[in-house]
Length: 177
Image (tube, rainbow, N blue to C red; front, side):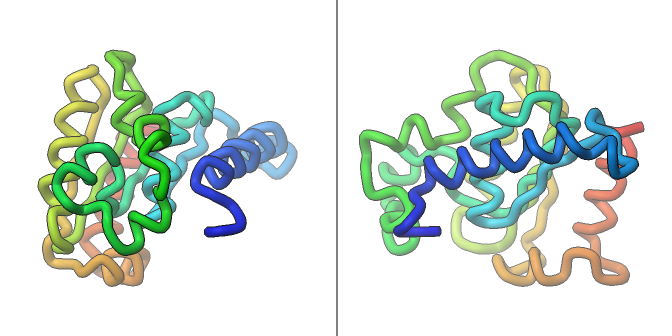
């Protein structure tokens, strides 16, 4: 990954992997029309970016789990382009192209589940992104994960009684039929 593979390269790799899975899933008993892409943190950014820019054609739904990187230009304006974000996105000339919000352009997108943790500004960032996406007619489910830290929202996923897991499963049942 970084620095050997920049974020643009990582996104292209996600799209290649998705195309491979979509082309081969039926031979393993899967349904190419029921593929869901999910990611946490940097993976959340990559799923949002590739799913919204059209790099995951036919994806049934997106599950986005806790990032601030929906709008890199806004993140920089708010002073959030420091630390890990500055290392991941060092070139301001690429921020627009690498921002998922850039691709929220009036088209309806796959049903999208957005979760956020109690980490600084996550609620506001997720709510703003969900509002923009919802305004396109895209079905958006927003999960208040303020009971979770950035790490526990991912670590606890799939455990018995986890509220986020239950909410994602309900979203998937509704989205996939």
